[in-house]
Image 1 (cartoon, rainbow, N blue to C red):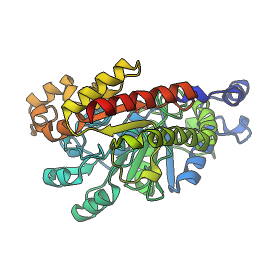
Image 2 (tube, helix red, strand yellow):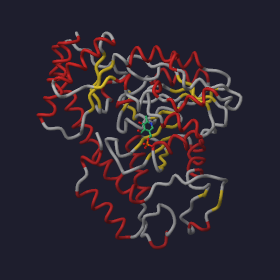
Image 3 (cartoon, rainbow, N blue to C red):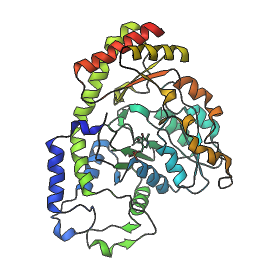
Length: 392
Ligand SMILES: Cc1ncc(COP(=O)(O)O)c(C=O)c1O
């Protein structure tokens, strides 16, 4: 899964070039950089690939979420509805703006359930944030319809699905803003980095200024003379990351092709067992980073796990995943007790996660690497066969 797997001389060449030119800042030094702007090129390439009108490189996926929320004007106390099955950065980004995360349920696709979102909409709701988890799209048709009906923007956390699609469109381009991550655990990495996609010029400009101290960037004069639009922060991407990003995008088709081929091989091999793969809103667009099956009951999932362990290739049960499931995030507990900008936030309320728990405790999972030899793939197939025999 980690993108460093596919690092080779192309990354060395790209980084060496930036260092040899001693030009690591994305802004300024216009007179001496011979028109070379790697982050600009990276953003342009992302735009060409996704069809988004605007792309902004930032220092991480977390920064991308924070800047996107700032860009759409989120204020303290605003409510943002998202999923209990995500990486905690989704929640942290909301909290960073002193807004209030409201957690819905997930459905069998393991994505935010639009019906649960509709139940949670209040006059304070200012955004809906579906997260495309473990390589797969959330039900974007339903979120788009919901957004239209209630006039609430959708911010797609697409940090885990770079290159994934929904009905032929790139994930991250279907809402008001979408975010990608290129952190060290993603299929494609630049070390640390993120991208925000949007078609909205006004939102883009707000984000562009905010991510770099409010500067109004211009190539007509040097950085010191840039005008100031207001206050901001520093979530800039460097030219080193931009250069790595260009290589990563070149490698994207091959990397996704390899993951998809491995996943297909595994699913084809275990199909005769009758095991049920995680249902998807769009199988074509799956980035194939994970192989997940839905067991009939939580007990069956435990049996499946025990049998896979015996083969030496244990699966995970997603309900036990402390990184990606809000039930385990005790850190949110304090917030639930605070009167948070006049709103008691129900962020940490495991009792309200029963519906999601019932699904995640039946979901068994194997992660895939981009480069996998035949023996490792066969090991997973053997484990799944053993698990299915024990559990189904
Ligand atoms: C769903 C999701 N959102 C946001 C992030 C944050 O991305 P980053 O690690 O680049 O800050 C991650 C990273 O793991 C993620 O999986």
